[in-house]
Amino acid sequence: MITTVQTKTYLNYINGEWVASISNEVEKSLNPADKQAIVGYVQKSTKDDLNLAVEAAKKAKDKWRKLAGSERGEYLYKAAQILEKRIDEIAECATREMGKTFAETKGETARGIAILKYYAGEGMRKVGDVIPSTDSSALMFTTRVPLGVVGVITPWNFPIAIPIWKMAPALVYGNTIVVKPATETAITCAKIMECFEEAGFPAGVVNMVTGPGSVIGQGIADHEDINGITFTGSNGVGKRIGQAALARGAKYQLEMGGKNPVIVAADADLNLAVEAVITGAFRSTGQKCTATSRVIVAAEVYEEFKQLLVKETKGISIGDGLDSGTWMGPCASESQLNTVLSYIEKGVEEGAALLIGGKRAEEGPQANGFYVEPTIFDNCTSDMTIVQEEIFGPVIALLKADSVEEALQLANSVEYGLSASIFTANIKLLLSFVNDMEAGLIRVNAESAGVELQAPFGGMKNSSSHSREQGEAAKEFFTSIKTVFVK
Ligand SMILES: NC(=O)C1=CN([C@@H]2O[C@H](COP(=O)(O)OP(=O)(O)OC[C@H]3O[C@@H](n4cnc5c(N)ncnc54)[C@H](O)[C@@H]3O)[C@@H](O)[C@H]2O)C=CC1
Ligand SMILES: O=C(O)CCC(=O)C(=O)O
Image (cartoon, rainbow, N blue to C red):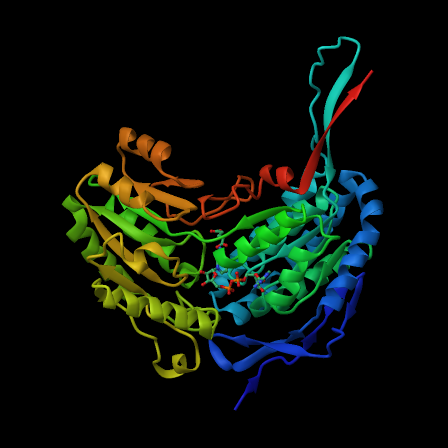
């Protein structure tokens, strides 16, 4: 029997109004902690709905662009204040939709508020430089202009922070937007839209269309009136979006997977390293592109580290993210659970030794949800699938290194380069890690996850399109530079 927690149907937000899809079809958002609980329904939109949203954003863009940056910032500041009032409700909704614990979604909502405030201030910061011309009677300077209409395609794993860290800079630099959230967390996004609506954004500046990625996401990538696309999600989808955008000359930014290593050097503080590996690998049920998935340990301390890690992992409580005693919630969906279980199976088949976990967690009420045990593999080698591919689940592959050089070589032997961390007090070693590690985010004596909103974020190799998000870096993507010469 389906237990309906809330059966509200959420609409698209187009041109300042809440509207149903032309398709008259909806999709349900399920609670991964209890698959019989429906969180609500969202619109299964069509290309025609998307066209209406793009048309509204296009119509609104000139007026929005011509406002002072400080005026645009004021709207963001108001949205931050409204989100602040609704923090518990929106965090709870995110936990219901994708499973991570309430403490995590509340922290994420607080981060969303801080991002809105940061970019509200950005509306008053400089947008160009004066550059001395070789002609002494001329004035030469740069200024920045918005791209126009920006398409925002977001995943389910950070349902509050990622849409906000894309939408806030897009808006403050003068773009109008059409956001397409992942269906799994589209209700959380609708609630963020409600905050924008209450903040009084002019009609058409902010639009949301929910629906299948293959229709609405691809539609955004292909739409000739969308001037820029910002995406976070899987590698395969990201590459397709990049190719579609490139083919029609639109600007794009892709934030994709990671296979993030932690190196534990022989001199590392092992307790600190264990704590960081546990949080980096298992918080959010491992569903972060910055999650720790490979731990490369110096041979001298391998056994001791392994024992400590397994002991701490045994203490992890799995359950509904809304229960205060839960440390780790379920996977976000059944398909995500199946992906994780199939990677675990592959690990065993390819000869890795299962130290702990490895199964679906099905005790009592967990039988109704998409739970998996935190899992650690021993005896891993670099050629194994679980060491190479992004799993997006609570799975650690342990690798032994006989030298610092081997540890670094193992760390770099994957197609991704998002985040990497090392535990050591040896300055020479940490500096060579900073220099030689192929990753956009380098962490020393800290977990691999941990993104600060005021700093650039993005990866090398196949982790991103080499652009950066957040902090001042966002300005590079969401604006174009004009060089002006006046004589
Ligand atoms: N880097 C990250 O933060 C994320 C990585 N992933 C990876 O992707 C795997 C699968 O997760 P999914 O939710 O299926 O990711 P996905 O890449 O399919 O979804 C991300 C967003 O793209 C949209 N999308 C899907 N197909 C599209 C298309 N053809 N054109 C345009 N947009 C499209 C989705 O609706 C969603 O809004 C995960 O197991 C994980 O490995 C997933 C989410 C976030
Ligand atoms: O670690 C974080 O805070 C951000 C991670 C992220 O962007 C992602 O998982 O998609």
